[in-house]
Structures are given as C-alpha cells and as structure tokens.
Length: 210
Ligand code: AP5
Ligand code: MG
Image (cartoon, rainbow, N blue to C red; front, side):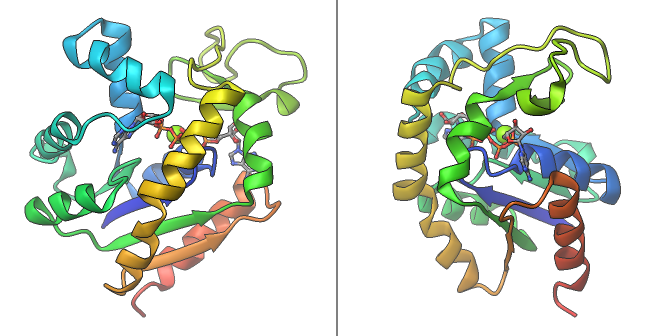
C-alpha cells in the first residue's frame, strides 16, 4: 500500500503515521523529519532548509523532490510506504506521479481553531515520539526511551500562522487533485482522541476500494 497523508500543520499526520506504519508494516517517510535530521547533522541541505522551515515556508522543490525520489529507490519501500508531508503542492504531486503511483491519499481534516494549541503544546523526543503538554502530567522525559523532551524550533505562534497560510495556499488544493483521481479518503478528526482517529483511519483504509 502506497499512502500519502495530508493535513494542516498539527492535524496529527505524524501521530497517525506512526500508528499506521506499525499496524500495516509499511515505512513512514516524513520530509519534515528528514529536514530536521539534516539540520541536526549540520549538512548543506539542513543549512538551506532551516531558513525556510523557521519562516514556515516550503523548502525549494529542487531539493525536496530529489530527496523523496532518492528515498523511494531504497529496498525498504518495496512493500509500500506512507509519505508524511510530501507532496505539499500541485507541482510536487505532479513530480511524484512521474516516478511512482500512489494508491491512497489520506486527508486528516481538523478544525483550524485546535491547531495553535496542539502545536504550541507539542513536546518532541529524539526517538520520534511526540506528546502534548496537557497529557504529560508535568513529565519532561519520553515514556518510551527516557530522553529529555524538546520543543521544535518552528512550533511558535508566528511560524505556525505562516505554516497555516502556506498550507492553505499551496497544499489544500491537493484535496481536490486526489479526489479527482478517486484516491482521496478523508477522516474528520473533530475532537476525537488520537486512538479514536486511528480507529476511523483503519476503517477508512480497510474499506477503501471495496
Ligand atoms: P512537517 O514536519 O511536516 O510539519 P507540519 O506539516 O507543519 O506538521 P506537524 O509535524 O507540525 O504536525 P502533524 O500533522 O505531524 O501533527 P502531530 O501528529 O505532530 O514540516 C515542517 C516544515 O518542513 C514545513 O513547514 C516545511 O518548511 C518543511 N517541509 C516539510 N515537507 C516539505 C515539502 N514536501 N516541501 C517543502 N517543504 C517541506 O500532532 C501535533 C500535536 O497534536 C502533538 O502534540 C500531538 O500529540 C497532538 N495530537 C495529535 N493528534 C491529536 C488528537 N487527535 N487530539 C489531540 N491532540 C492530538
Ligand atoms: Mg509531523
């Protein structure tokens, strides 16, 4: 199964992608995570990406498309993959279609009013696990690996606003793009918990095309 997961910043793409990847045994590829690893590693890609990410803008297509194209040549994607955060524009979707054919675009629909609190309350672990302060009960370490949690550099109100604007202009048109190809599955998240959203996601994925 080749899946794209689409949704506004903070919609829960990473949260659901981790669960989907575990349940369906497919690789989770997040372009945001790839860029953050490059920033941490001090690579040329990381240096370039940082200014765009901190401004809530898209990293240039010339860099992003090559990274994904290269990643999708690796052996571990043979049984399928879950792309989280790519494509993020019609141009990227067209580029992707030139080197692979996805099966499903899973669109997580979330109320914009919930996003600011979700993102600004997010606490990350280097192992990839993410939490929200409201559920941590004052803990500052990861329940899975014990590492100290941190706040992402782009998780501040000004950057979140810019990320949302970028999403609305550049990424939201992909909903109609994949609907026109009969590949769109939308899950309305409302105020569902992550586990409740995951149950709805599994129902939607399992019944797709039946
Ligand atoms: P990226 O890392 O993809 O960030 P994003 O799209 O802004 O999305 P987030 O990771 O912030 O949110 P999410 O939807 O994964 O939500 P999460 O599950 O963490 O991209 C970062 C930047 O990289 C971009 O701005 C851009 O600059 C660059 N970039 C990346 N891809 C690119 C591309 N293709 N082209 C160009 N540039 C690119 O959840 C958020 C919070 O909510 C957490 O605290 C979580 O615990 C909580 N939560 C999750 N689900 C629920 C729920 N159901 N109820 C309550 N809380 C919940
Ligand atoms: Mg994410």
